[in-house]
Length: 216
Image (cartoon, rainbow, N blue to C red; front, side):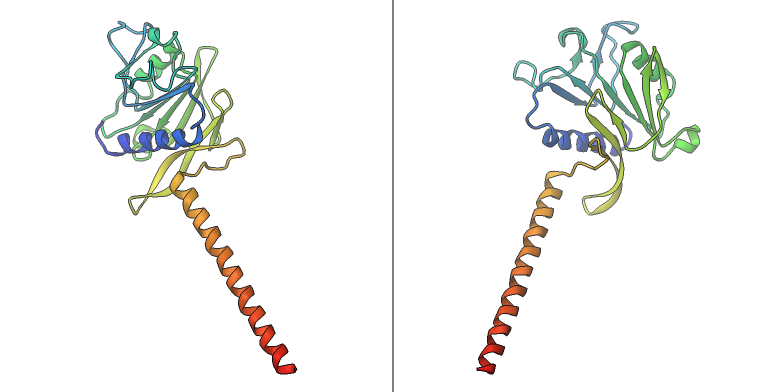
């Protein structure tokens, strides 16, 4: 990791997913965690993506937090989605790691490159889908992943009072899932508007009663 966003943005995805999938216990989202597998040069040499999602595994393995993800300890379930964020120093996201995830069998591979995509002659948001053993660049954003049941895309949000482009989850209709804080703000605004309507109605009723009193 050579910039703070490589830690921040995946953790925002994780935090939101714990809300969206709060009732599900069959998934795991790892951030900056080693994946050990048997499709590389050696089972003891892991690949460490910025984030990954696996389905059909325990949220807490044996009720405990994972220190790493070894596929042979997860019923040979490989991640269905992997995120790599391009940093100041190119890290092989478009070649070496693409090859690793191809052999591993990761269905969806997202390369997020908001700063250096022109340098690398790529797209800032490049989603690949593994088809017949080859990654094919996809189009459309937010991008819907039917096998996952989630879409992913970018939006201009705010972190710590500062505007920032953020990766986030979307539903099948293309609507962005809101964070718990956003949901609470929406509820508070609805309550404020409802209270304002009631106040205006009360004022109108009082004014009408005054008018009726004057008429009598």
